[in-house]
Amino acid sequence: MRERYCRVCGGWHELDKWPHDCMPVQNRAQSDLPAPHFISDAIEIQSMHDGNTYTSKAKLRSAYRAAGVVEIGNEKPQPIEKPKTDRNEIRNELRRVHAEYNA
Image (cartoon, rainbow, N blue to C red; front, side, top):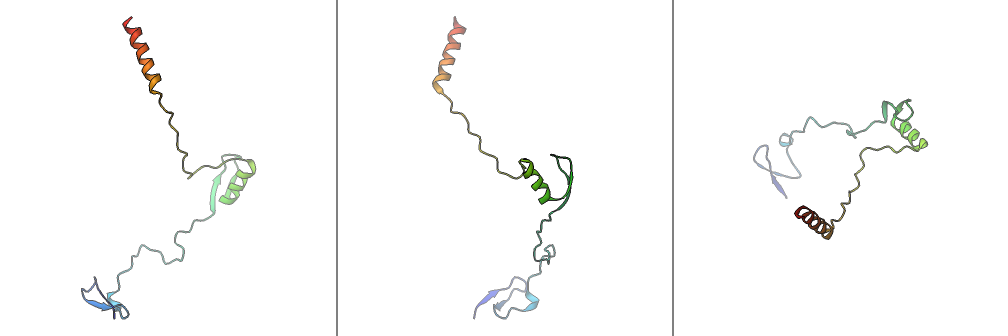
């Protein structure tokens, strides 16, 4: 027999026989649909490449692929490599400018 403390009534209940009155209240913001985060393919959009109006994302992307156009969007940006600083070159330039200024 396993029991758990009930936050609703403050008592202890067996896990097998949890009373219906003590069930936590469901969040009403959740959807009862099996797939609440469904993303539709339907869209009314004008192509920036050829100017035609498309009603499907798949058809728009296939037209882009056929034309060899690369569609950009949520890709992760490539890291930018910073050039290595050459300390000796900086030091020599400072010495040259200092010598030129003092001359």
